[in-house]
Image 1: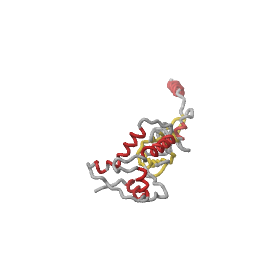
Image 2 (image 1 turned 90 degrees about the vertical axis):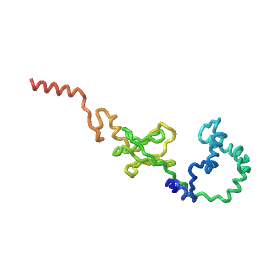
Image 3 (image 1 turned 60 degrees about the vertical axis):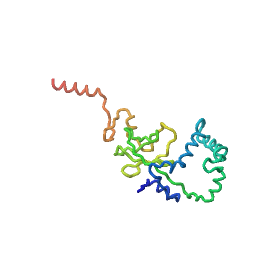
Image 4 (image 1 turned 30 degrees about the horizontal axis):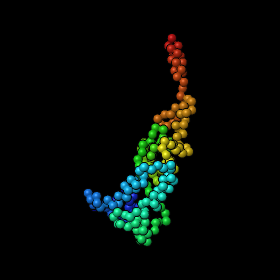
Length: 210
């Protein structure tokens, strides 16, 4: 019995195709599907440099037009671009709306009220009780859930080493920056007494005993 991932089933329903599982221990049943990735890696990516994503896409478009799509395919013995023109008439149109792919993760909250996702930190509300939360990563959005309830929605940060703090988050942590304040384990800020007050109390007690 084949059990497909629910997200794959949702994708198949969205685009109107039926997934089919390959037979176990039969690499030949899917080798033709994976082979193009090695070809692209070896013939396009290796030995190249890219300034940014736009430069990569420009170089890729030039490579497709001048190399990959005008070659004679080793198996079909047909020019790739010409074969695609013939097959294009049988292709189904794409859905009007794009599929919202979703990656579910579990993350632990740091001591300063942040969760780490792909090298960046995202804040959670100060009142979050659980130390572990569920994270939903979409293309341009990150949702943080506690006990199935969304508690924070962030835009995805680019790069690494960045922090995103929503308005109203980490207020208790900021209160520690105020001189004379500390934070109890309950999250309630309290005033911190100067240490020399204990010397004064000891001297006063000693005087009473005398």
